[in-house]
Amino acid sequence: MSSMTASGRMSPVAQARILIADQLNDQGMAILRDNGLQADAKTGLKEDEIVAIIGEYDGLIVRSATTVTPKILEAGKKLQVVGRAGVGVDNIDLKAATRLGIVVQNTPLGNITSAAEHAIGLLFAVARNIPRADQEMKAGRWSKKGLTGVEFSEKTLGISGMGKVGAIVCRTAKALGMNVIAFDPYLTERKAEELGVTKVTLDEMLAQADFITIHSPLTPETKGMIGREQLRKMKKTARIVNAARGGIVDEAALAEALNERVIAGAGLDVFTSEPIDPESPLLKAPNIVLTPHLGASTAEAQERVAEDIARQFVDFFKNGTIRNAVNLSVTLDPKIAPYARLAEMLGRLGAQMVKQPVRTLKVGCYGRLAKEETKQLSLSALKGLLARTTGEPVTLVNAPVLAETRGIELLERKSETERDYASLLVVAAETADGEHTLSGTCFDGREPRIVKIDDFDIDLKPERHHLIMFYPDRPGMVGKFGTILGEADINIANMAVGRREKRGQAVVALTLDDPPPGEVIERLRQAARVEELYLIELQ
Image (tube, rainbow, N blue to C red; front, side):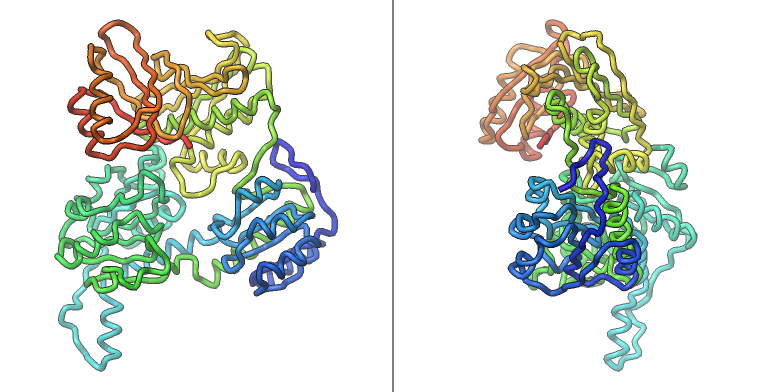
């Protein structure tokens, strides 16, 4: 198996053999063969049948039909890369592939246009009652009653998620004469100006929009983002479309809102459980258009992803270049590998503490650490920051491109001058309102520690769940935190406290076994006079 370099390149392989396990179009096959790769199309095989032959191949291309199991990957003794002609890689065991040193690639750009156009199609279908009108006609009824629609011109479209898909929807809406507002916590003012949209909060979008279309990734922050409370903040004449990810819209709450005429209509292409549960209340709700996850289902998109993955395989085997890897693991010098993990955690922490889009990510390496090759540490911090803002897999390879599309600048600093520690890593996330600075080191060169949060010295061992609170330093405050969490049956595994002066401002970082629910967070804010509170997930 060829070795991977830190730049994300592989040694070229001549006459590589590629197994095509799912349907690939003629053009995709031609791209592979015209560039000297041996492509064998053997579709519809079962796991054991693939296991029996995969040892002969250097590469494997699949769509969604074939599940690439650990058994298949382990049998692929020559296998270097698995390619998914599409975005989702749920059918590929990424942990097993990474453990075996096999690169997994996808084609994230092939279905952008199709996804955007499908969302627009749902908007038209919902606005003009097209499916219901079709049903009436086919039932032999020429009935216009109850089918009066609404126009888009001079209406306000609210877009949640201004990535590539959202940008296409935005351009289309403007061509229809619509006013466009956008809710995206990671959209910078500069990018909003380039797109010609007005940046708003979620509540402002809900209150102002006549139509809402969702293009946000499914993250801990967006899961259940549109629930009962949010739907009741919308206009009664408003319509909402979700063609992004299931789970962003609370389906039970949406069905209730439609039944009670809280909003005028909805269109969904994605669902929390797919296929949709036969008992789902959405199936009986009025004024809703449902499609079975057709966002990428166009002939052009299917052809595009096939050709994209073929070109990526040519680049991989002929030029040693890796594109759109979703599990790329760069081999680092053992001396700085622990700092790469720390950098990613500091990036994740910064992403969860900022309240505005990050404009600049500053990564500083000080002391002995500065003597090493630290480019991968900056990329690791960027990866951690972006992992909280996108539904796409983020790697050291694609992190700079994703950052550029979001208007995030990466600045790197190095100095061999020591700052209290033999080696210190500093990550600062800067927004229009200021910045949060996180510092860390690795004790004995191995054990990661967060040693500073903003201007407060602290000693925090990173774990999965943390609760970080800034509060007025008064006697009994820490006891209040423990009492409230204890009453909620939430165990504190560890605690770190920092302050600058007596009875000034202090910070406490609690390591928790489980994340506290919203009502407990609110009790902490009220009872303990917490000024800033951040519920953090680092792993």
